[in-house]
Length: 160
Image (cartoon, rainbow, N blue to C red; front, side, top):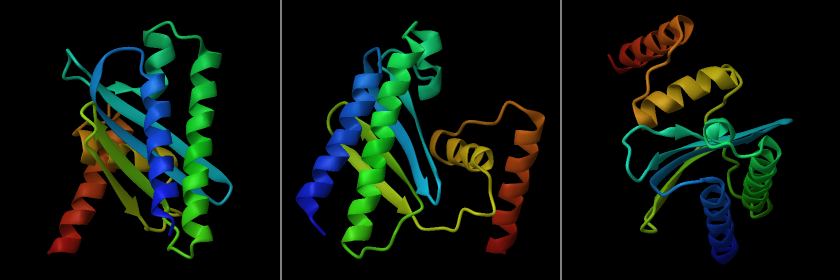
């Protein structure tokens, strides 16, 4: 595995995210997924003066950023993520299904790769779980709350 190339990709991903955030921030949680025929990415960031995370796909509405400009950056982010996955595959590494990258404004950085089969869950369900596990966010909808409760109960049952 070419660690230098991978490091450049990690930095490029972080740079695209930072370029997308229209205000001072202190921490970012990024979700990325590349599967057969599907890809997904979104992030939450914490503004410097606020403890409430901002969802990436809300940026263009909250900050009057042109939608086209935002989605151009989002597509750059997806391209970086696809190149990162390709780097793993090209170097005979186990192909991850998704990852979480966490970094802050001091340069501290962590990335966790997940190798679970995601075919049994839809992207909305994965997002509910990810938001809860990484940000402590509860779903707003009743169906989302019920899904999360069911998921947490299943986790508890498998531990016992």
